[in-house]
Image 1: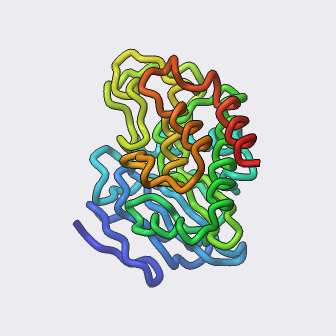
Image 2 (image 1 turned 120 degrees about the vertical axis):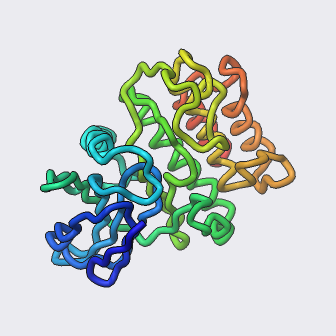
Image 3 (image 1 turned 45 degrees about the horizontal axis):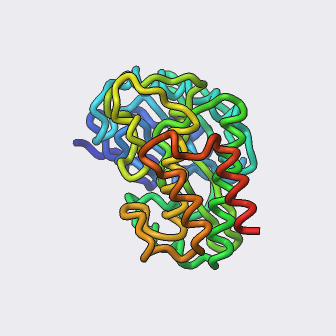
Length: 273
């Protein structure tokens, strides 16, 4: 491992890499360099204000692949953010081919990331109960929007969710792996956090669709209202009806889940009205 400095930020890499391209958008003030996706993420401030820069092309310390593959995935991901544009989805401003990589430029948000790896998931308790219920509804609204357009989530988990602890507004990010349906599991164990994965995401040849995605959505209800690891009733702070709605989404038997993400979102909205 080596360390390099860009502005006042230290970046850990497996090999040297020129990061001077960041000056195009301003001065780096923050970095996320321990992802296993092959991306480096920067907070940059400049003439356009604060921006989030997601860059593929370097060799981050936890990445086991080659930069060319990360670059290819990043190029493909641009279409996700452009096609699924929604008030809850982070806004992409531009995508740029660079000398040694590829960058996606997003709006910056000061919202709190709920992924356990960031150590702030407990802060969801700072929201009121109604804000927590509404936050789940926002996620479900986006998921219904994506499903209606024929897209399926891969690797949807708590790390994709940021929340404003004052307003309760949710921002979804890091959805690079969304794909147009149909998807067939050609990996065996697919990408993702086990807490949010359906049985078919471990089954080679299984269909991955909006019925599959309900398991992640049900688990995310527990991220806000309970414990997404155990899904226990004892940890749940919502009412029985909401618990049952999330529980149906979490059924191991896909035939027992909701008929669509839209049906799940509608049931949640009705129960929380």
